[in-house]
Length: 164
Image (cartoon, rainbow, N blue to C red):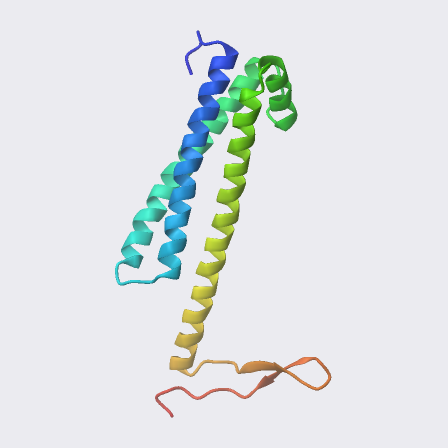
């Protein structure tokens, strides 16, 4: 940010830039979810490109966060929520900056939730693929079920499809 900008202008620009990045990240995470839940032959390539785009966006968000921390430090405030609250109280008589910050925080929370959901889908898919490979190789360790006493127990080892 330009050093001749007022702290309010700097904070306004930073929050605006971070919000735009978070909106792009949310859209990207939504697209990732769609690709993970509607597998097509193009999905692996699309997911690869999407991952590269996500890494770029995360780097840009990290840079914007660094700039926000520098802005707080320049105002002799801690680089945490207490410091940001103090800066907002100092600069934001109308409440517009606080609303921008709340919008950004909510959007980042949505991104985190969507990213966790997507990660869960990837993990589930990996387990399913690994199970299928184990079955094909005859390497399954058996299926766990519950016995009458409520404890899990393993039932037999599967044969490979080639043996069947």
